[in-house]
Image (cartoon, rainbow, N blue to C red; front, side, top):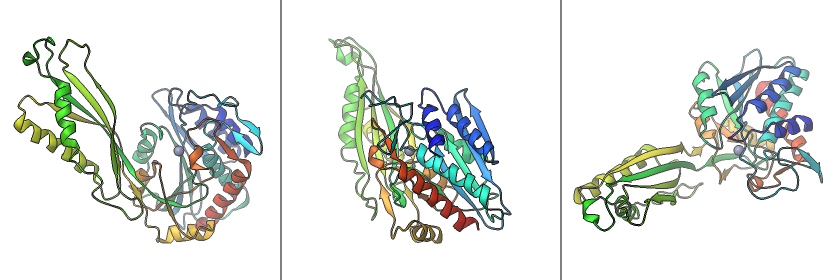
Length: 371
Ligand SMILES: [Zn+2]
């Protein structure tokens, strides 16, 4: 189990490298456990892997979805090489040790143990590990395209991201937008001959200030938020700029509708155009992940509460691929080993006892739903 995690950490899967090596480590592991798997490769470096422990299919299948990719090691120095798993102080260190190669390895290990020891499973156990959760969610989208949720009658899905063994049923969504205003260049001494894209952006941002994303509130998740985190425009002090872009980071709650937010912004463009005839702007979606809100009182979640000893569910600060899985109209719960606040940081680690605990939890979950 520890070895599988170490191999996964050493199979670097940052965005510049891709996920193939990591998928192959899992494929080898499943092959040695007698579990069928399938690695899907595209764009030379990207990969997803699916594996299934087959059953008599008397009961709906259980789905586990992880992500293969990790964020880069970052510029701060580590105590040991982030891509060589190091064991010290009863912990394993390395990029992905917490987010989320431990959860992924623990599910794979639990499946292998079940495959070896239980002969009459009543529901299929489906494992999926996908590409690009940290960047573009491309892997989960590909997986869902080829996955027939109706044919694969499912009781629910578990995402083994690090939650420190809390049951997470909700998190905010994100909508990243790039707004570009367009103008016309002219000499800086004759601004009347050009259209200043930065000036257009100023007008837009003034209007945006009146757009309140925090008006609606969710009981569990609070309000949404919006911040302008990137701005770019202009080439020289003496040239009227013809282009200006800003990037907005909008965090949404289930009550928000992402297309409606885009429509609202288009409406701001239209409003400005009425009084400023030379105003021209465009909107581009960089990334869109809806909020997650699983009914925390459904049978699937209530069973998980009993199995894991959690009396209640919680909301997470971070965003995951879980909302894409929720589109299958099944309950989705995030539950896994590792502390969320050490993700994406130097000296990321997992406590070895949490790894063992995770395998036991996933085995008990499988036995509950599949026997
Ligand atoms: Zn993650």
